[in-house]
Image 1 (cartoon, rainbow, N blue to C red):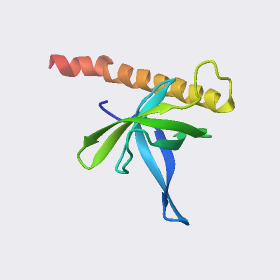
Image 2 (image 1 turned 30 degrees about the vertical axis):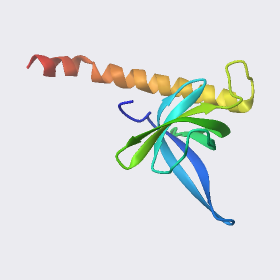
Image 3 (image 1 turned 135 degrees about the horizontal axis):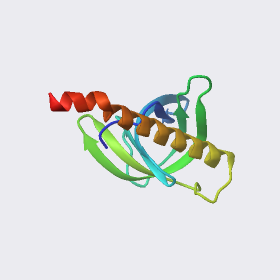
Length: 132
């Protein structure tokens, strides 16, 4: 969990009393078929459920997987923030729902962006810097 996934955020809402809600955006650090790891200063406990909208920032139209239910399974403190491991509820490989399709597209784009970034960082320019 070195750095946040590129151009991807999780958005969720937190209730404050009866009529007030806060919309929060959090960075994602891992994402797979079964869940994700997000970092936020909001406090959850293992066992809490959270409903996430995952939003992949794209040049023309963002890819959004909305209303993904997740179960908080682990919490790790890091400075004034927490890393939360979240297992998706009712989302799997065999599920052919629109949310699952969008989630799959987001994962595919993340993988492509990460491989492009790693190719750039290990390209011919970086080899020249290492030999100098």
